[in-house]
Length: 473
Image 1 (tube, rainbow, N blue to C red):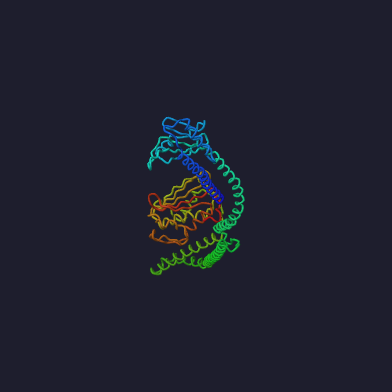
Image 2: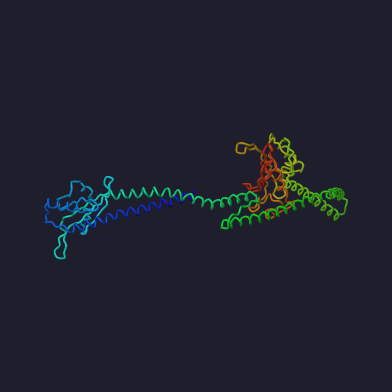
């Protein structure tokens, strides 16, 4: 379309300029010939002054008969006397501007006038007395009025001929032009579609290379770049898969010896009070660190399930408020000065109780570890754009909140906001697992700072759990 528009505008502009130049040339040729001839005849006119009307009329008729190839009507003015070579009322074509210009220009002047749809050429030449080398105005002004209908008809014929010849020629020229444009635009469209497919992750996309011109070079370069990108991404995916498999294998291998270590440390903890102080401190330290290692291993195993798309939902209809209370009671977070709750009854949802317990425990535990008490847990419902009912769990602490540079990375794996948090314990996987569990229910989790300070983490989940698409980030 753009090519056709440019072609049409170019053709129209060229035609308009050509028409204007040809029209001016035709009119100027007729005009120059008539003005020169009339001036020459007016210069040879001899009549007594004041002129006799009958004699002057005959002289004007003689001048009109000599007007070739055009037909003039000659008109003369002397004071209030007006004499014409014919009976046609052409004096109405003579404008006041032409009369004033004739008195100001001793050699005469002319003007093109359109009267009643007919173009006219009007010429004015004042006659002079010559006394030796001195010329003085005589007061007699001669006018020649010439119709330009013939020139107008010639111009119209020229336009018609140009139109009748140019339009078919333009139509014929458009065919090879469109074919040429198509041969250029088709590779560009192919490149555009290929780039879109690459953007969608179809890294095996290639463009057929045809010819040896610049477009063929561009297609070849695109194919080479796509090949290198495919190789790089494939290698990165393999490396990522190897890393995930390694973490999963190591986690599972550590699970069995850790179970034995936890059993031993529990026995040692029970007898720690009967041991020497230094030995008791060492036993308690080993027990605590073994517990952290066990949590880290379990978190790694859980993350590996999400990476392998092996995580499943085992849903049941539960009272959300009661489920949150059980989570807090199990962790012994029941002190109102530590955790304050706002849990209205009657909000029922279908979800995986075990995974929801992990979500609430991670959010509240993170707020207690890295924020400041009291931590507020609030439950309510809302409608998503008036269509889908959801329940919302907000966990807000009383600490300093998140630093702006930390917010985008809150749910990243192994991320610890040391610059914003004075204490940094845990595996760094808790919030990442929380996000995966929420997405598995078809919900969302967001981190922000409250209006009065403190970090706020908000979970929105549908009352009827619907797993999110696998490519949900």
